[in-house]
Length: 382
Image 1: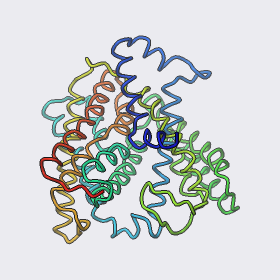
Image 2 (image 1 turned 90 degrees about the vertical axis):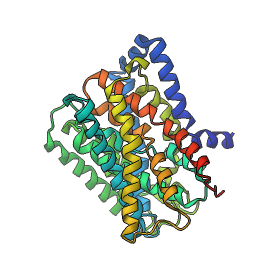
Image 3 (image 1 turned 135 degrees about the horizontal axis):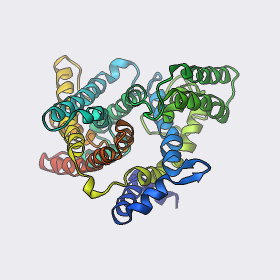
């Protein structure tokens, strides 16, 4: 049973299943889908709010845990020069799609689509990792390069959500950010008091952060991002991204181990809540998002990493320019975080659906990457 559960998680099947169910439901019975998503479920809270504003707190917290561990001595981001190549590629993976989006919008779009520029900046960590393993094999250096890039990419994505996509239904009230600072102070005090259980950090520190962000008009899904780095953890990391150390009994490791399973399977509900767009929703925003992910991500990552290599930032041993181009294509799978940002970028539901369709179409980059890998004769390293 454990083997089958791990297989479901590894292949992101809960998320994909949620997307498929949402697409079928929204296209055959759109009225009941919308009613399910937005009718009151727990008091005044609806399914969409519970998923995007509460469940996604833990999704972004797991990402923050990975970033925290990677920045520790021995981690993949420490020292900074060790990750300079992937980080420079990340810059290209942000600037490239933003530039392509704004350029395409200038030519084919309109002023009301400008705010969607942040949607194609994301990279879906889980699905891109899976595709990279299919293309390169589990032990190819391009897989680690992609993971470093994707983690850094989503770290920037968190900042973009926080600063550029405030809640349109709540005007910005920065004074409430005092509660976020208070939540961080509580987490720091708990750590100083050597509290090992992660629940006080989540309830007291995370609760204050959630209330502060929500009332400030910023997205509360980021509340635990400010708390997770304070969870007690070793000062040296011994494993790579997504690897678990059975000897690590720290608070951060316990939180990540216990909640990653919940998040992996809970992504079914995220897909169900966000991917229910009708096929008639294809529009200009769809092609702006998809085109920016396909061309902007690929070219941005390739050109910036190529420039870094010319400046003597070496690519990992065993990785060449062809592999780098494939990494850029795979990183164009925005999906999860792109779906999330699409819901925040536009107030108009029609534009939200058009943009979400572009994020869903980005899964086709997997097919492009696998086919390109075959044509280029990539030698997989198992």
